[in-house]
Every structure is written in C-alpha cells, then in structure tokens.
Image (cartoon, rainbow, N blue to C red; front, side, top):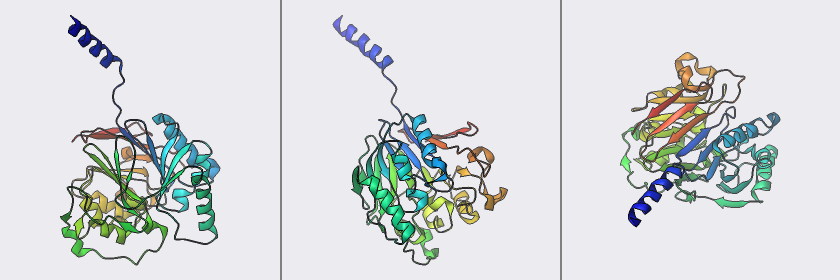
Length: 335
C-alpha cells in the first residue's frame, strides 16, 4: 500500500511540474547590425551584441521587447563580438534598462581614432561595473544547460578540430584569399552553441581569410543545424568553403534593407548542399526578388519597418522550428 501511495504522489508531482523548456534564440532586427538573444532551457540568457546607439533608443527597446517575450529579466552574459557601432554601440542604452552580469569580449580594440575610442570607452565604462571575461578560441562560456564554445577571438581561431570534426575540405583548393583585414571584424568572437544534438554557429563579422583558417585544409567545426550568416550576408565573409563545410540545414541572415544580403553571398547560401531554408530579417533591396527568400521567411518586408524578429526553438534531439513574428509563419525541422 505504501508503494502504491508513493507511486501516486510521483504521478501527481509529474503532472504539476512545468515541462522542461527548450533552447530559444531570438534574431532581433537592429537594422543591419546584430543582436541575438539566446535563452538556455534553464533560463540563463546570453545576448550576442546590442545593435546601434541612438535612433531614439530603438535597438535597446527592441531587445527589451524580445527579452520580455522570453521571460528574461537580466542578461547573464553579454557577448560583444567586436567593437563596431552596429554591434557594441547599443551597450550604454541597454545597460540602463536591464541588468547585465557578465561581459564577454576578445580584449582590447585594435582600432583607434575619435569614433573608435568613444565607442570602446563607452562600452568599457559599463563593462567595468560587471564581471569581465576575455575569451580565446577553445574557451567555453559557462551557461547552464548548453555548451557555448569559442571558435574565434582576437584574431585567432581554433588550433585543433572539435571532437568528431577534422575531415578534409575538398573545396579549399579553389579558395581565393582577400586582402588582409586588420580591422575589428577579423577579431570577432565566434561561437558554436550546442544543445544535445542541436548545433548553431555565430561567427559575428569574422572575415573571409579567418573563416578559411577554421575550415581549411580540414573542417575544424563539422556540420551545423543552423548558420547565423556571417557579417550580415556581406561579401567580405561567407565563402563557399565555409558555408558548404558547415552544411547547414537552415541559415538565418541578420541583414538590413540596405546592408548585407549581397546577391553573391545569398546565392552561395541558397546553393549550399542540404540547405532547407534561408530566413532573413529584412528584404534586401539590392537583391531584388531573385536574391531574396520568399516573403513568408522574411521578418521585415518594408524598409521602414516595425522591427519584427525571427525566433528559433530547438529541442535536445536536434529538431527545431523557426517562426516569423510578422506573419506568425512557422516551419519545423525534424532530426
């Protein structure tokens, strides 16, 4: 009888306990900058970049709207991929509205001059009020429930392949290098986010030659489920050697109406073997109908927009869905 009673209690408790949450990723429209909110199943949050300053606090307000939708009341980890205005500019405005506990970056800026110094000093003024983590390739960002592995930082990339990766990349022979990039872009913090069998990559604005070092002559990363398109889809990043090596099932492009979404990069992603869908934050004016996804997969169709986001929800078995907040269109991708 006692065992029956205990069994009854277990059934009752299982019924009232909340279901385990999944991994949630919000690609927030900051008009051609980046801001991506990741919420781990246990509730800890990581925000990658903060968009622009100014614009009547537009980007901070859009981030806060996404955070509210996700039930996030503080940012546990803010990752600043690099010190450009479309990625780090919004830090002061955001920090005034929501607590930020840990600041993650690659260290000192390599750019100087009035604008660069103002941007970096404004960021560090708030970074100094929290905990600062300077990361290097191979480090992890300690978020409970998911693995966040640093792939690139400070101009360096992984020295050795991740577990299960390291296969030769046959496309490396046709790679053509670009001019050496000495800007902050090449120093971007890039991460691989893993939740069970689900894998998503975000390389910030890491540029062409540095991408090569990650996937050539051997692919150090392996395949991913979701590729957050590098550098907003600009043709300084996103080589076929990188995209095809990643073999993504889905790509999400954080472009603006008139920034990123270059036709040649769009085509490279579109033609990637195994790609099911390419989602975009904006209709790219330069691409026309031929080099944009269908309207259902674009969060903002008009140049003057309401800042709609794309939301990804991933399960531990590797299946996931992407939904468009503009039209409520959603597509699921089973493992």
